[in-house]
Length: 78
Image (tube, rainbow, N blue to C red):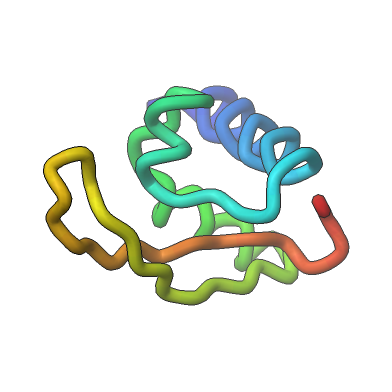
């Protein structure tokens, strides 16, 4: 993966967070085609972004419970 692709993915994450209250791995794949969200988040933290996270719970379409990490950037988004 080239540096430009990673940069573009980080930009898509930031744009997504401007209109949403956070992003999960599922959101990243479905809405902005980012497959390795945790890697991009790690890079963003190293670049100085104030990325926060918490665990969220939910149910999938089969009614099974799951936990997922939800990320947001402090000061960006809703």
